[in-house]
Amino acid sequence: MPVNTFILYNGEYFPREEFGVSITNRSFCYGDGLFETMHANGTEIQFFEDHLIRLTHGMKLLKMEIPEVIESGNILKEIIKLLHKNKLYQGVRIRLSVFRIDGGRYTPTTNASSYIVETEFIENEHYNLNQKGLVIDIYPEIQKPANRFSNLKTSNALIYVMAGIYATEKKLDDCIIINDKGFITETISSNIFLIKDKFILTPPLTDGPVAGIMRKQILKIADILQYRIYNEKSITEKNILDADELFLTNSISGLRWALSFKEKRFFNNSSQQFIDKLNELAFKK
Image 1: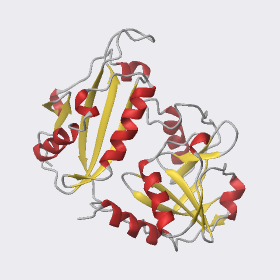
Image 2 (image 1 turned 90 degrees about the vertical axis):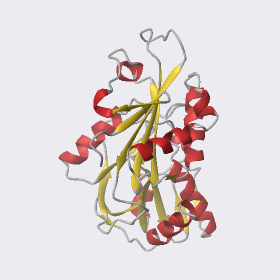
Image 3 (image 1 turned 30 degrees about the vertical axis):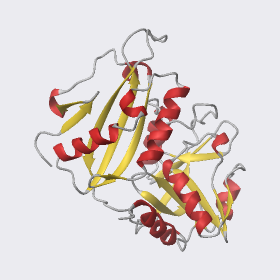
């Protein structure tokens, strides 16, 4: 990695160590922001259009004005330039954050917004299946409300922070978050899928999981592989205990399979098949 790593802020490039946000930044003060985390291989960003659609949908829902460079998709050129400036030509994690500009307290004085893009080298140029299965369990301390904002990736991530602390304390690889009705929603940073025979189950968006970009791709792949898809019915702990396989998905890792949940042990027979298809979709060149 180069000594001077650059970030992108509202169309301009700054050395990371010289850049700082205001202490009145609304994302910092009130969680008034959204973000997208994207995977890139060199300057090819996987599922970029899907990320942009989700971001602009969230900004409209939060009544943020969308910068023209984001609405038009021209921000892609700016991000690619940033990757070149940072000499990142292999696996990359990209974080695009948007937030309402400074002004006001709870009530903003404007709906205009700003954006920041950060990049980071990662090992996985493609999506690779984890060799060691994950050990997971329920996070019991806080339930996630299911509402209009539940599907968004907002700057308010306290429930995931606390679930991460719990996982560390209990020596778990990840935790399952439940909603205010007691149904399964997701994990700390991933959507969750169950496989039983030739059926695939994932929590419906109405139950409050983040509307994952990788979730969307896995459902496409499940259709290609002729699985019967259940993504409109709530999932319970009993469904997990009845499943043959359980895997987690997000934009950076792709797919990770779980070895155990409580006393239940899982196989990973289908996980490799799904991740192979995922790589075909993501890296068409």
